[in-house]
Length: 561
Image 1 (cartoon, rainbow, N blue to C red):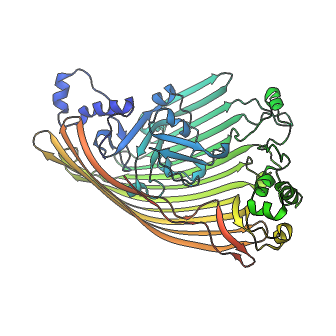
Image 2 (image 1 turned 30 degrees about the horizontal axis):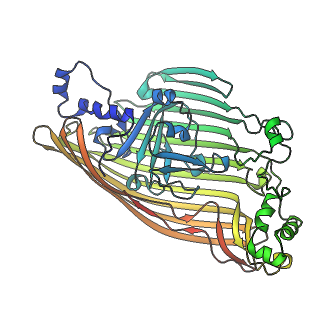
Image 3 (image 1 turned 120 degrees about the horizontal axis):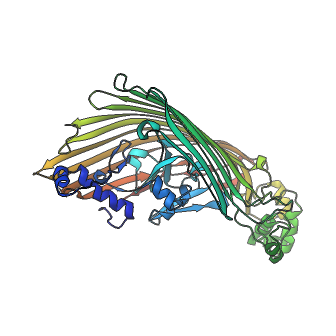
């Protein structure tokens, strides 16, 4: 596809800024008495000028984020065309993204990967509040050749402030209104002789709500805390090694959706009961009302009313809901960057993520102990970036990247699932000939381990006096082993479900700079959706006394730009 000239304003500024780095930069300096800033991107996992990128990228710095009141990842829709976040059940842990009208259809794999300082974020941390952010890059289109599965729609890359490259800084800010209250403190600088640096950031955001629960607390007030920090070692010219050790902690309490208020509750701003989705005919249990609506159940019991009473009195259907949603998340990472004399670099990043989430606004789930989504993710990536040709000469230079990635993600989830329990003796007695029981609860652990090898090659060739022809070739191979274990609430077991799959993604691009600052390119790239087992089972198949006979394996999907 060709570059889009109708992106928002700071991308247009970037295109103009390319004059400063083009072949005719010296001539441009003689004609004009100003110079625009150069905007860099890390789409290929190393810094490059945005105008040389074969692909569409949108870049926002901290000033743009502040001007548009972008407080978190889902607020990026304010400044980015074609990016739409959707939050499931009011929960920040279930966020997926639509890019140019396409999404993955799976809240546990949105098709857009989020990175913070190069650290891959698990699905439960896709909707983050911003703290200490320097720039945000939004890459649209498949990015599978560099970033692997889960990036078939694009990448959101967040870079926080770095005192080694940006110098010392300090900021204290607060703003208050009847709707929200926001506070933040950020500071960074040198601790010892331009060798040891550190930074620290804290942010707090409250979005006020007015509806009270039966005990009187304002449960639909959203609140988030974010703390991050890092230590940097900069060896300098004599010891060309940079070491960064950092981490972050966030705690969120989100707004709730699916609250159907009565007229009196709306006027008094207070819930009279548990705050569930009220069924006008079956207010005691919404979940039992849904189940009793099954046509097979109605046919056997004679009416939905009779089926509802039988299900409600069975003792297995509960609507006890404490309407709240919360999440705590921890991230730690170590980055090593070694710089060789010839300009080559070796980069290593090791990261761990942990997230504990609880969203109680789902049918039939009443306590956090029964409804926590717990994710654990470990990632190790090592890359070698080589300078090609004549370093600094845009007419005869390039870069080659090769890397390996190992990632392990474990998710524990207590979820609702749709199952066929017609072989269950309890419900055969209760419902007789009914063949479908639409919803049950499953305690599931999904374990995904992946290994990837990837490479990318970019080179610029001079054509005539000012024109430049460039190519970009990328390839990635990924192998994943997925396992799932768990149990259904009536004693069935999901015993050692396994799935293996392989994915290969590629990128081929060619560009031509015909005058300084003006470039056209053609790009063909692919991306893959993760396979294995989704973290929450939505269909387990037929359940019998011998256990589940099928699982929720997903086949890896492909998307081509």
